[in-house]
Image (cartoon, rainbow, N blue to C red; front, top):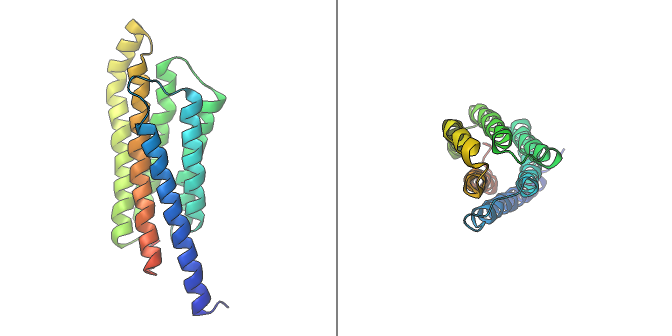
Length: 193
């Protein structure tokens, strides 16, 4: 059986790992947001960003105690969405938006459900992260009808495809902030992971 000192050391190491993961995901979000205006992200770049964020989130989730499986599932969904982009790059905008909407909706459901299994500030941040993903999916769904007309008339425009950068950035930054809050609770040795 582990001593209290060993448990505290493991909790601090987990907090450091989760903090690094949070900062890495925020950096990915900033990188996506800094894509030059009017410059389209290729399917490979979108896929690589999603896979990187998903793997980082899965590793961070493995360091958590209370909602480990949900946190890892959210990371797995993100990585899977990225894999879809890399394996099936589409030049048409409409098929490209579908995996993003599905990713955001599934991830939001996982996070909101996981939020019901934790307490305190982590609950609020998990719900906020899930809510952000849901809102982003709703915005994409609402814009899809307008987008389909634009794509039908003008083809996939770089401005429409570049909007993915902002969707990824918003989701990644909020997720990174969630992980920083989890790390803060770990450091304070609070049980709501």
